[in-house]
Length: 278
Image (cartoon, rainbow, N blue to C red; front, side):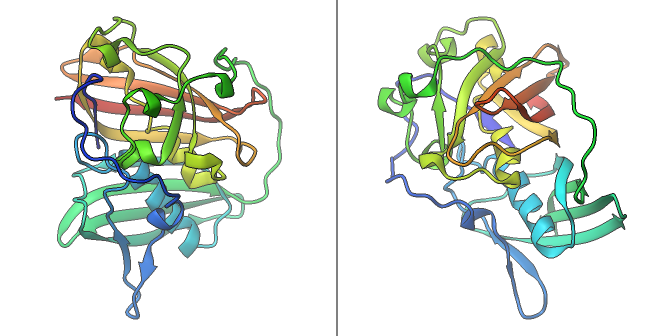
């Protein structure tokens, strides 16, 4: 999915009033013949006019959870074939792969007519409790309530930026047309207005932040594959501390590693994606 941005001051499109459209925008409907369909809205578009890849993943994960007898997600991996077009209706096909006692695995395909758009494989766990040990550390960020809302500084309020709130400790260099050269980003995120974050929203937030390769002067990055490891849900209404970094670019492809942490310093999710620069 396209993740591209222009530096502050260039046109992003018309703003619209911010309204809570989650979770209905990620929920499929079932017809009398059993067909599952998803309305592709422009409310989760990136500034390039294409639906955010995290929204696509969240929608497919929600469908898997709504239509099969599974526990909570532990890992989801999605490969993107083509971007859905806003204003169209996509169809979803859910295929249980292995419904084990401890782990259940499901595949979901997203298509528009005969055109495949994405395929997700996700594994879920029933009520499972085991050893936990945290060796990592969360981003050291100032309290989000004391940081400015980028939408008050020129970030648009339509599309994705009207659905997800960001708080950044410093203005990114790319936003002023002066990339820093350090492809690392640490920031707070949450659904707009503090809407409770469920498992699909965790998947969504691994792909909503501006990609850190922007700090290398690369303005358009398209996700090819994204994998998310799920650990826990944050408390309702709280912020998620997020860290994203790119360390390798090879032949126009790059990786992006992500971590989401709750306000108590506990890991919410990890992600890795492969993307191509355009």
